[in-house]
Amino acid sequence: MTEPDRHVTDATPLLAVVGGGQLARMMQQAAVSLGVRLRLLAESPQDSAAQVVPDVAVGDYRDLHTLRSVTKDCAALTFDHEHVPTEHLQALVEDQVACRPGPQALVHAQDKAVMRARMHELGVPGPRHALVHDAAGVAAFADGVGGFPVVLKTTRGGYDGKGVWLVGSVEESRAAFEAAATADVAILAEEKVDFRRELAALVARSPSGQAAAYPVVESVQVGGVCAEVVAPAPGLSEALATRAQRIALQIAGALDVTGILAVEMFETHDGLVLVNELAMRPHNTGHWSMDGAVTGQFENHLRAVLDLPLGSPQAREPWTVMVNILGGQPEAGPLYDGFPHVFARDPGLKVHLYGKQVRPGRKVGHVTAYGDDLEEVRDRARHAAAWFRGDLGDESE
Ligand code: ADP
Picture 1 (cartoon, protein in one colour):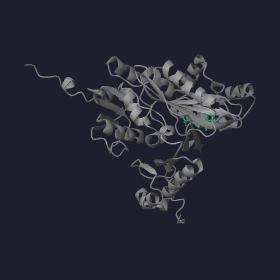
Picture 2 (tube, rainbow, N blue to C red):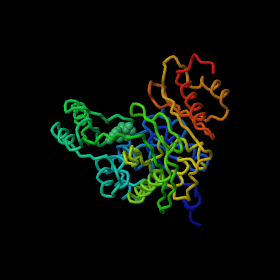
Picture 3 (cartoon, rainbow, N blue to C red):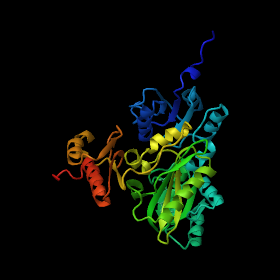
């Protein structure tokens, strides 16, 4: 008798994940429930996800050899971040590795100029924009959109507001060009959208084309960092919510995205939605769904990349509010010390800590509250996050 093929006898798939941040850590949480095994490529054994995934390789995601060895025998490859070079992903695809999302899709989350050009082709509404190469280019662009201020962005490598500048004059554009030259990337100029608020539309999409759209949420950004998410976006008309979901589904289909696609949008004062940015992985604006939806984004991401039927994205309660825990007061003490107060005060609250070293402003966890009274739910979530941050140290309530 011939030796049985391990892949036939052991049907439990192994899923490779590049990146050891909190998104991979929360994928592991979903993987545990599904009995799916993850193999992680982390940058350090201390990474948030490396602490909780037993099968971890420490290495450089920019090295093709490393990527090849991590993906060996894996059913699919997915990502905690979008920084793997496109040419390496193309090489892996040629090796028959199922990259989900694939390089042709992912490039739209890696390069803002490529994304803007494609959105334009698809007729998806967005801010007016142009690649600019120097100060004269910025001046000409500003003239064309009714003057300063304008927004400048590095086309690649930005996150959490790093790589984004609001500039009020040609002189102020200098910092952006210096940063772009150092990083060897281009600069994209965009009109400054006078938005009413920021929204996000998340969809999960599987290789066979099944898609599930989460309720459209409002995200509140502070200093370029997501601070709070309310699901669903309060007061959003059904028509606009449907339009935002349709746009996200259209993009997911047209780009052949697999896994979670997060579409960050601006809602304008005259009732339009404009696409700001795409992310092709679980996203901060979807964290509410872990506790607040029938199927959380991490589980649906895994189901999607493994081409399993998707779960319902519906909310469990009328309102869910997620507030990020950012590293705060140095004297705040370990995050764990926040548990007695937070849990005693609010038994309905859910807390997720990422196992990360606390540094001022760093995302180290999030809290989620849900219920039927938005103000109350929001207060509960804000209070808990502020407590962990050390901002309410003197309050007994
Ligand atoms: P990042 O890659 O850092 O997430 P984004 O493109 O999402 O960069 O920009 C970060 C934040 O900057 C946005 O959430 C929004 O608040 C603001 N911003 C970005 N582009 C514009 C724009 N064209 N008009 C107005 N504000 C913008």
